Image 1 (cartoon, one colour):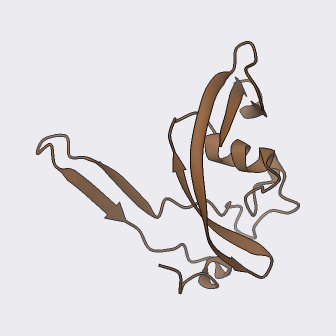
Image 2 (image 1 turned 135 degrees about the vertical axis):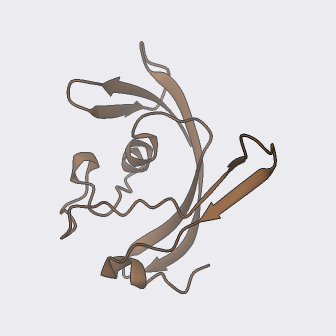
Length: 120
């Protein structure tokens, strides 16, 4: 998915445009639908670029706002004020050993995440 993102630092909000726009930066990510339950999707998102609010604004631009993310189009917030965006796994090169390193985190404790607990 490719958009051009324009950040408004005063509002701490980013806007996605479908084509090149003055001042906006090209932004790309890929996603895979991992599961669908209760009318909600569990997506695996892989950013190619790293722009402010990129995942949030690009998913919202395709009509799929993140659960609890009222800033980018969710209809209501989560009870704890969080949004359902979770860095399940990060991969990077170790800064000293120069070897690939992957770190995997458990799902958050919010009940909503439990319905996807069986998805690996």
